[in-house]
Amino acid sequence: GENVEQHPSTLSVQEGDSAVIKCTYSDSASNYFPWYKQELGKRPQLIIDIRSNVGEKKDQRIAVTLNKTAKHFSLHITETQPEDSAVYFCAASLDNYGQNFVFGPGTRLSVLP
Amino acid sequence: EAGVVQSPRYKIIEKKQPVAFWCNPISGHNTLYWYRQNLGQGPELLIRYENEEAVDDSQLPKDRFSAERLKGVDSTLKIQPAELGDSAVYLCASSLVGQGYNEQFFGPGTRLTVL
Figure 1 (cartoon, rainbow over the protein chains, first blue to last red):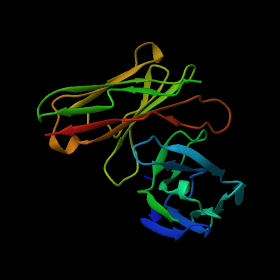
Figure 2: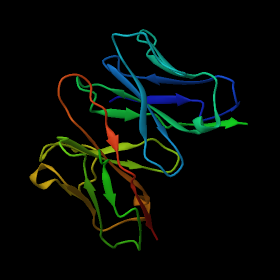
Figure 3: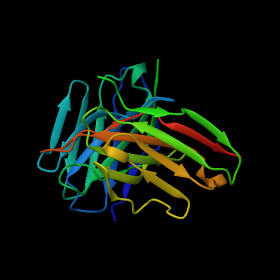
Figure 4: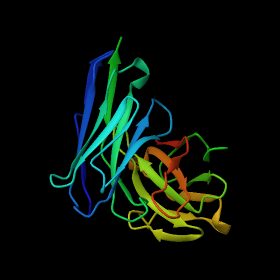
């Protein structure tokens, strides 16, 4: 089955700096890659996603890149703000509608003022 | 739009006791998921329903866990008997499966502590 690894497990950055979180997946058939943000004690929420036919996607300060050959994808957050502090989970999905997710273990991001 | 509702939010029980969790998905969502999230880890799928049919329950420990989704709307997840290792947050999510990729919306979760 699919296995998703995520690095680093914790990340601290100064406010205004950039943060990068990387994930690798094992099954080359995976075709949908969402990123979820989970603030302390709250529910996971989708922040950005990418499909296997796209190499990069941006949404304001957030971007995701996908390298299908190497089977890895990354989340990039620019101009970090204290409210970006949370746990970020990547996931990979094998099915056509992005329903069967395998999540990574998460990265705890701390943005220091 | 109301989000996914779960209850209770917190539950503390002694081992060997039964426990049940309830989930009300977003109105109109045909697919419902139950995940277990252990401390410091990502959510792990337990069971997925498409309407009232369980289409993926391969990760559900069937000796002690059961789930149902009557009428294809609300769902309950039950553990009987609970073990110490069942302590975790149980998340419910729902989505509307159609053409293309469909976002999964998560509920707030039920934090279970087994003593």
